[in-house]
Every structure is written in C-alpha cells, then in structure tokens.
Image (tube, one colour):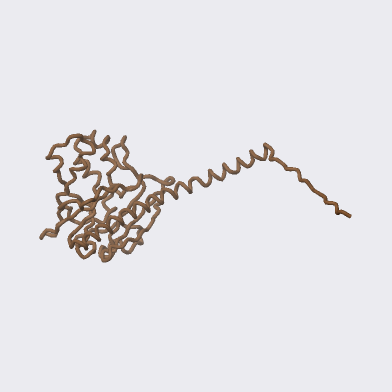
Length: 264
C-alpha cells in the first residue's frame, strides 16, 4: 500500500505598520545614542593620525641625517610667524596660508654655529610641506612645544608667499624668518637637547614634565583657524572637555610614545 504524505503549509505573516514604526523608532534612538561616540572616535583618530604624521617626519629626518652625516630639523611654523610673512591683514585671513597655522611642518638641512645656534641651510631635497589632518593643531601656548631656547635662524619661507601672491618679487621669495619651534636631529640620529626648554605638562602629577633630559614633548589638540575672528580656536568634545594628544620623543633613540589626556 502506498504511504500517504502529509504536507503542512505555514502561512507567511507580514509585519504590521505599527510594528514597522516601533522598529524604526528603536533604531533611531540607538543611532542618536551611538552617533556622538562615533564622532568622538573619528576626532580621536585624527589626533592620533596627526601625532603619527609628526613622528613620521622625525623618522625621515633621522634616516637622512645618519645617511648623510648632517644636522636636520623638522620645522613647525606658528601663526604669528606666518602672519609676519603674509604682510597685510587681508592676506592673513583670506589666503591658503591660514591652513598652515600651527598645523604644518617640513624637513630642512641645518648647520650648527659655534655659538650653539642652528641655522637653516636648505629644505630637504624632494620634501614638501606636510599639513596635519583637518581640525588638528599644535597648541598655541608657549608650553605646548618643547622648543629650543634659541630660534632656528634664517628659515626661507618664500615659497609660501606664492600661495597668496600671484607674482611675488625676488626679495619676497628670498624672505627669511627665525623660527621658534623646531626639532633638531644630529648626525648620529639623536635629538638635540642643548638649550631645550621645559616640555608641556600632562597633569600636576607629571614627574617628567620638568626633566628635559628625558623627553621632547609636543601637545596637539582639536582646533582650527577661525577666519571671522582672525585667530586659532580650540574645539571642545563636550562642554568644558578638551582632548590633548601628546607625542613624546626619546632624545637618544628618537622613538615616539603617544599619550591622550582629557582636560575637564
């Protein structure tokens, strides 16, 4: 006798309009809660990327210094220095030069004078200006950069004039400035510490902040040049909360260490 087969058909049930609306409301609430976290994560990544960019320039300068047995420097121009180069107030606010304010660096060959000062010779061959990721800057305060006591002499910044002036004169192109913020790499690949000032502190309990023989420290944060106010403004993640990314260089090895600090 042939066996009988029984088939069971399940009726497919569709979602109701009310159920779909409830799901959409829940997803929207989850997105609203999670969005600030993703935003903060993105900003934090930019600060880390900026720190790694600076470390990369130091590494390139170190390799070149050892290979060619010469002094190298990574130069970090500040807003006040570039303003003096720009000349007029209009050029300061409306030119691409503002993108370099406390957010750029370039590698240069330098020489050491008998007085202990360092002097610009030329930009490293095939080098270009490096701009930090958007909305990341090196702090504008005097304690935000472990600088040398004496400025780097006669840095030629005339190529930047071409960014805001179509036909600069020869004298403008040859214009030089003394730069305060720079890190020198010696021919043996170490970072020069002669005359180095106190590095920026991370907190009141920071025990290496005053010991300049241990670390060269740069402090970065979230900020940008504000054209309407004509100045650099810091950003806050939330009200009263500012995030700093520190790059600490060992002067003997030029190796970098990263630290994040939230000031609340």
